[in-house]
Image (cartoon, rainbow, N blue to C red; front, side):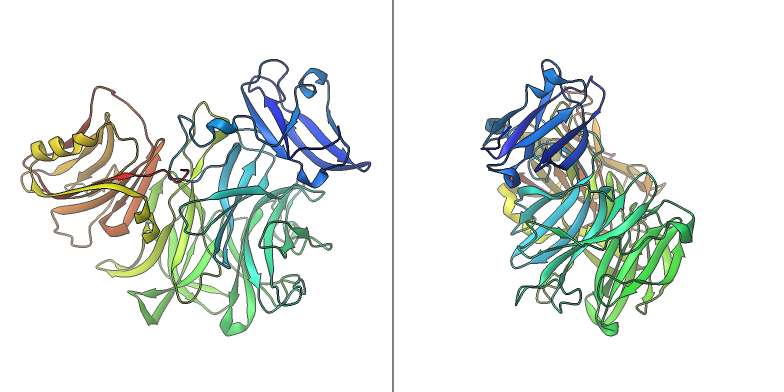
Length: 521
């Protein structure tokens, strides 16, 4: 096939077994992946960007499936372009990829006006596998443009999670003139082991060159374990060096480097699994009082001190979020004038009956605040989310009958934000349901919110506030300005039921309702 258009559109059937497909050019294998290539009528279509092969001949092979190969066709549009982002089960203000599977956010970095979101991505199936680095950019953290795949599997393995930095000082020697390299540090996964590799980009993260002497870390023998993955790298100014936090076997290890190529093991702390993070935050905004936060994929965290080589925990483990959130990563290189620590988590929320699957949760700002239980991590949506507001209404001091009347004026809206404060007096529990699903269930007696232990900062408080975001397929809830949050799949359990505030003689002190706009319009 001679390539004359941007995409190959490939038919997929969920009922067939995966087989290996290869794409070769110039007598060399360029791509290799597992695929459920349809034989007859496909369940859906995926695509592969073949711009790099423009005006060249390629050979596509898939064992024992000549019929499926004959269905592949070239186009400058992906199959289903007309309905893209309008699909019934497409999230409207959460990022999801055009086609295929996505999970962990990777390589979160800000550079020259763009927030870069790389992510674990299977371009060829709505299920996990074939890990590539997908790529999207945004100027405001809300509206995203998906770009071509950034990193493809290679001889070292598939592209697992990692991070990205801007090498302003040219420590790795990849810079070109006055243009600093964006450097990705990632895990390559193969049947034998997981190793750490690097790649660099000189065009704002669009195209990448892999380092010729990869891997830069191979630690399987040291740990007698294949579980060595997910490097998070950042610049540690007091030591004038790079720090890597790497999950190895039973916890997080600290490595140091001056050039991103040669790494020295420094220390290890047990008790975490996957996707490490380590960053410093001011307590209550006081730059003279800072603490370090370390967490793993589940989001449980410790607060402590860090000297560039060793993290010393002072309190924990704590949690600030539960539910669908996993593998949260924070952005590197946020300008000092901004100063925020911004996080994006993978939302383990399926998109049913679609050629794509899973989403990213809302970007949130992380802060450390003093509470009666000590210093704790708060997470709350970034201020940029306010630009999604379409219509807005507010009421105060309502009983349940009044509140239900007002909120059900919005029962047919598919995209909503609901801010509220409940006050309990005669009741020990109260909450809000929608279509039979519990959005908020606060039990003051057992100190739980939707079944998870939660104690307000004011231990005798009879009030709780919530900020609830309802998308097509997901719900995110932020309690008491981000002291605790949770997320879950939106479900219609009883279509006959609408919004319902419940609780004995409760007061809804304030109720704010926003209709939201799609990020895709």
